[in-house]
Amino acid sequence: MIRPSVGLLGRIVAILLLAVTIEFAVSTYLYERASHVSVRDDEARRLAEHLIVARRVLNERPAAERREVAEELTTDRYIVGWSTETPPRPTIAPAMDSMRRQIVDWEPSLAATDIHLRLTSPGRTSVVSGDLRLDDGTLLSFRMREGVRTLDLAFGRVLLALIPAIALMLLSGVLIGRILQPLRMLARAADKLGRGAGGQGAPLIVPERGPGEVRHVTRAFNRMQARIGRLIDERTRALAAVGHDLRTPLARLRLRADAIRDDEVREAIGTDIEEMEAMVSSLLAFLGGEGDVEQPELTDLAILCANLADDAADHGRDVHYVGPDHFDCRLRRFGMKRALTNLVENALHYGERATITLHADPGQDVRIRVEDDGPGIPPESLELVLEPFVRLDTARRRDTVGFGLGLSIVARVVAAEGGELTLANRPAGGLCAEIRLPHCRT
Image (cartoon, rainbow, N blue to C red; front, side, top):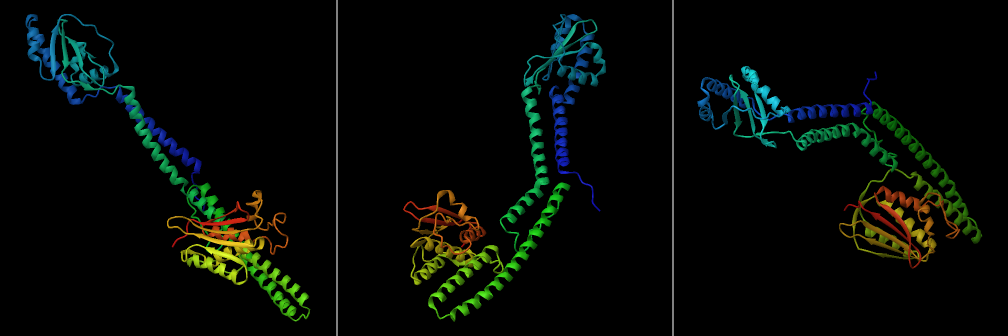
């Protein structure tokens, strides 16, 4: 049974809608709060009680004594005064109107006194003052000694609105990142499959989780790479069978060629057989038909390079090794030997001399260079020759043996080690093939 699920777009929209809704609600609340004076309820109650007492006392005293009585009613919190003249009354600000309602709520009798509040020094910390009418129409004035902190500033509102907005955006980013995590896993698996990691061995099964669209893509990817794995296995088995079937008649041909008495004919047939064997070996090596995947092992790379040079020298070829006597590196030994052998044979085929140079400085990439003194490669074809089945007959001699897979095999072996193969023409003439191994571990 397929469970209904919200799609990827729906989840992202829901997260953003939730973030915007919460941010709007918080910003609205802070904006409303910012338009009010920050006065505690107990402070409003004290002021209301003080005004009730002061108004009652002043109403009971004659006008001649009210000024002195007002001074006696002054405390360390409030300054009380009496006046017969009505001061100018500006329009009540929203902040003062809110505070007036707060006071009247505590002492409802003050509502009939025409109580009026004002800010005598507006700013971040403001002093609240005001007046109210006595029974005879005169005024009782009052002023708070301590200022109250106000938030009625645009800058403060912006800062307070930005804080929850930034926090919610970060939270939204985390939630969206969790939703997109299966896509990142799928991208990494596709990259590994593209480099050939999933073509052999255990399949790269990606967990099917996340939104419906992502699960559908993941399921299709798993099925696709399973089909690719089966195709590669079938191709490998077929190539192994073909290689065995081809090598058997080649071996019979070699035995029969040895029975030919004519030396010239026997040598010509032997050369053709060797060329056919080289072509079959290079094709099977490139297409992966020569056995299981080799595992990395600790290898003395310096000894490997030196042995290749010594073997070529034993056959009368001019090959030299330059580098340290020993350097242990964890890699696929037989694959690297095949790659270096191809480079050396390529150098000797198109040149008279070859030099193998190993640079293995601690903390740096390992570099192996195979240089020759041949004609080199046209600059526009340096990348083309790395493609399989490419042979530049216009640049090199036409007696090339094989299918043109030598450099392609080298590039594949080096890529399996996490390295890179680059070709460059030497200023003095010839070709320089460099293998760089950034992940060579001792």
